[in-house]
Amino acid sequence: MSFRSPVSLFTISTLIWGSTWFAIKFQLGVVSPDVSVAYRFALGAIVLAGWCLFTGRSLRFDVRQHAFVALQGFLMFGLNYVGVYYAERYTTSGLVAVVFSTIVFMNPIAAHWLFGTAVTLRTLVAAVLGVVGVTLLFVPELWQARHGGDIALGFVFGIGSTLVASAGNMAAMRNQRALIPVLSSTAWGMLYGAATAAIMAFIAGASWTIDLRAPYLLSLAYLAVFGSVIAFGCYLTLLKIVGPGPASYVGVTTPIVAMIVSTLFEGYRWSPLAAFGVVLAMAGNWLALKPARRPVASAPRASTSPDAAPAVATSRTNVPL
Image (tube, rainbow, N blue to C red; front, side, top):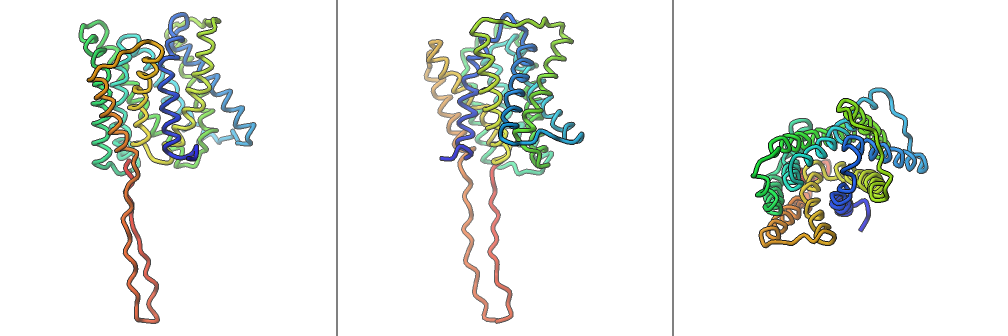
């Protein structure tokens, strides 16, 4: 199986981002979330830019291209991530995961509105299965969240960051359709995202500190190289190949991987309801990613006229988006 196949790209993105939930825990505490996001994507931009130069990829773009790459970076790597970090300050990670999984509805609808891509019934059914499955997975956390506190504020940050992430996906689609290279634009996008987080940290009056303990530094390196460079490289390539609907399903399967990691390292106990939620989510995953059937073209009927042009069999395959 090729590493550039949709299944491989989807699997790599899911496995890495599922593990970053655990890694992010080591980022919280001493350093402000805005500052940690800025560190993460600045380091990621440096690593990816170095890789682009090493492999002969150009990092040069004209002013117009930079404007759209900056838009993608502002949305996808800056505002989105700061919003998620703040959402988890005010509510449980489970609620944030459930809210973020709704991107499987937002992406195909936004792509249909902006680019005219088809929204199939299969995509919508898969999205429903995925969101319901993730909701069942986090029922205990959601039940605890009902006791009040700043849940509403956390929800607002969560839904806002999901909308921003979807907008970032649309910006990425626009850039890919304009033939802007994925890796080079991602390197610049991460730099713009880091600048966005830095500006937000400055506005919030955050202190620019650094935690020099090993857990923070190692988790930062993992989040920058694996969680940013590799995972986003795979995800944006997947977005280019299969479209926004199936690609956004990473947001559904990532929480499942995160709970498996939690089982291994934090002693998470599975309930029958959570297990059923995983079954539903995986069913939606299979439905969203399975290849569409290609209609069998009938053989052209032979013409008895020597002047007749050869018949051409044409078919149109609906790729679920």
